[in-house]
Image (cartoon, rainbow, N blue to C red; front, side):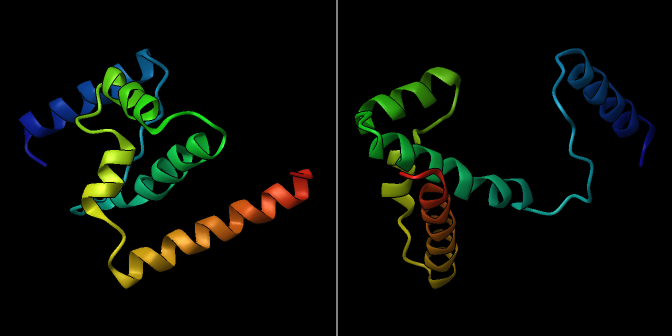
Length: 105
């Protein structure tokens, strides 16, 4: 790693510690972070809608937080047409349903 890249990396880690944000160190792989958080992000948005929060409110909250697009709009735009994505979301829904049963919901 070059000196400038190493200095920038160290600065990012210092800032994360200052704001008490955990840093996830790992090899750089295109799409890793997005793939790791996308399903939980979308599932939480869907839970909010299931609990009665209007989809527009969920998207507005994400936009106010600084996201470029709300999760409902993102799901509508990206869709869940790929078999892999459908399988992943199906598994996530099954786990959530199992948790609801365990909690008596």
